[in-house]
Image (tube, rainbow, N blue to C red; front, side):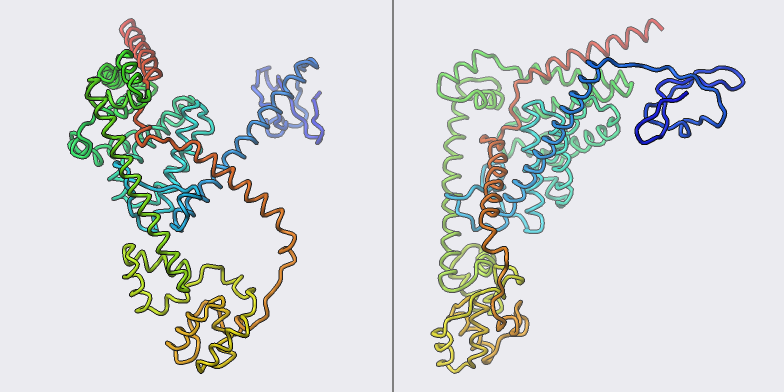
Length: 506
């Protein structure tokens, strides 16, 4: 006697098989009898477990809710990915108007933008973007969706050079956040990976901050705020050792964490005093920890930091405005955005030097911004422009081809033809035949307006979701009330004590 599923494959929920003697066999639902080792002509007794219609309905609703939740989570992850890709692309272009277009930038601990090689800039931008998004989910205690973001961040950080990772604490903080997710999701199967990540975090902190935090003190003047990271490190090391059965090591790390918790305790009345002076609760906590709990020193520290950041942001904004204006100036002279970017980058932003570079490197003149596949769909150059080049002594067909390449720019076309003896250079991205071919039309050009508009709205939504989760304070990752940590330290210390008591009794 068997129960059958619609596809005809038999399965049983609970089974007793009679061989030489009756014995109980644990079975897994939805496995065929053959998979469970039931041979031909074997006697079997089936226990039929019935569910009420109410139970079936509840189970169906539960499965449907879980499926919908999984689909929403996947859509959210895809939006996050799309938003970060757009922002990373904008950062790579470095020609966005900071007043009109949202973008991300990478800054050092003082708030100043730092130059990073193009080969690593995109990877670092995506790594930090995924990390910030994951941290935002951590704050909302959405650990299930935070973990994929944090693991993606880890993947992109691994594309950066070792020297870069040793000079910033971002990578170490990421390892702590991933292990915190493991702990909150009760993923004990990740204990080995947790150990590796915690060891890596400790090594990175040492490389970044110095043996006794001397490098950190030299840069920031104190290390009070960063103690929060070490509290989290010791706590997670204690938890990992406890679940690995190492009660002595667990107790040692948990006591270290408890000691730091006492050092980082903030008197609520001191926070209230700073709130009355117009500072935020976050500024108050960070300031008090940086100044060992002294309210007056904390107020001065916060005020000075505000003024310093305001000045730096003003200077960085002006620097971006000048760069954008220089690119526009070169574009007005006929150079493409790509050529202008490369020349200014080589000239460290100096417009006069960039012009000298362009004059000395004519091959940069024909650096195009558009895709080669779409270059041959440009409109034919005007007869007036062709006549101007012919009047200068150039062949009419070559003149037309040059104008196609340079999108009707007579100045660049003339300079290129003159520099190459009246012909186009052979290494142009577009051949002469392609330049002379009639513009192609796409059947989707006219019908794509609505679709493009929808895509643009979706991109804007994806970007805005990312920007909403980027903290305004550059030391947001160091701010914590430590309420969760306090409860967890007490909880695991009690577990360790119970373990010790049980060991003594045995």
